[in-house]
Image (tube, rainbow, N blue to C red; front, side, top):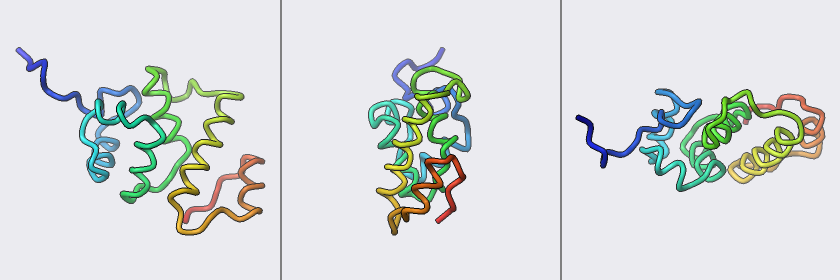
Length: 115
């Protein structure tokens, strides 16, 4: 018999598994309830601040997972809007803002350089 009051693990969120649980734990986030309460943007921002390298696919997999959707369900205008949100999060956590060239390359869909 399971304890219905036990917190749900991060891996209860679709698209997230043990590696995500470890990354969130490093950020001080230990349950799926915590992630849901923070929302995708704040939870991902905390991951970056805790040392996780920003990666767009990881971000939108989290967003899709919180909506109960498969990670690869994000397409078209929705994906473009999520890329803008991701870039905003990344810039807010970077020691240096994106250059005009990096911004232009992101618009063209070129992979952003690692910082």
